[in-house]
Amino acid sequence: MIVIKTREEIELMRESALIVSKTLGMLAKEVKPGVTTLYLDKLAEEFIRDHHAIPGFLGLYDFPNTLCMSPNAQIVHGIPNDKPLEDGDIISIDCGALKNGFYGDHAYTFEVGNVTSETKKLLQVTKESLYAGIREFKVGNRVGDVGFAIQNYCEKQGYGIVRELVGHGLGSEMHEDPEMPNYGRRGRGKKFVEGMVVAIEPMVNMGTHQINQLKDGWTILTKDGKPSAHFEHDVAILNGKPELLSTFKYVYEALGIESNEEEEFRQ
Ligand code: MG
Ligand code: MG
Image (cartoon, rainbow, N blue to C red):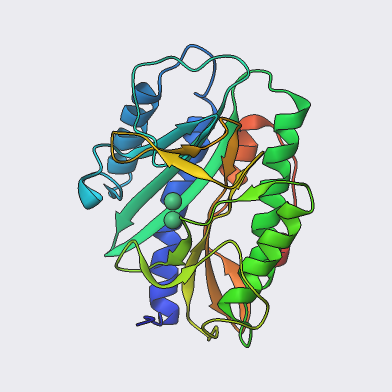
């Protein structure tokens, strides 16, 4: 069942999403060679609690930490550990926060030191595909329109779209209906209506779309060992159009990146 949100609820959800956005911005300054993902996880937990919110992933389905930390060939759901990040790594950080009874859920893939141009392109294309998907999240369109836009954008570059993990409705539950696959066919699936809120989150592999799972029961990684990227935004339908609730603004401020990519999704 799809739970439609009121205007007031959407504003509360924006608050939750922005706490995650600020957490990612704080982490952007800390991601560098030599730092461990467990250290970053502790910083994030403290930061979220200081903002009077609860880490959204900690304990959810028994996940042990605040952040999902997935370096390089890990796609999503990596568990923070004491292994230092290395120059040339990428690290996908997925973060959730619960405030006022609503979840934010939002992810960014960071470069650690200097990464190859091939890897930079993977991150760029994955992020652009997220916006291609968000553009289709509007009244009258369907779930398949978002999936098609993301898949089409990435497969043109020869990248693999992960099938087993998908975006989702978001609200008082972290995972609500509908499922939002990053692949699909135009005009198929559930129809979008005013007041829907979803997390759109392409997971894009440089090589094959096929995956493996580690014995820890959590970590999903690429079957061919090539890198994977993950970007996620929380989006509502407001006045028929996509309205971004989360923002990469704080990450960009921390990294000195100029961007107006989110402007088209603000009313
Ligand atoms: Mg997430
Ligand atoms: Mg999500």
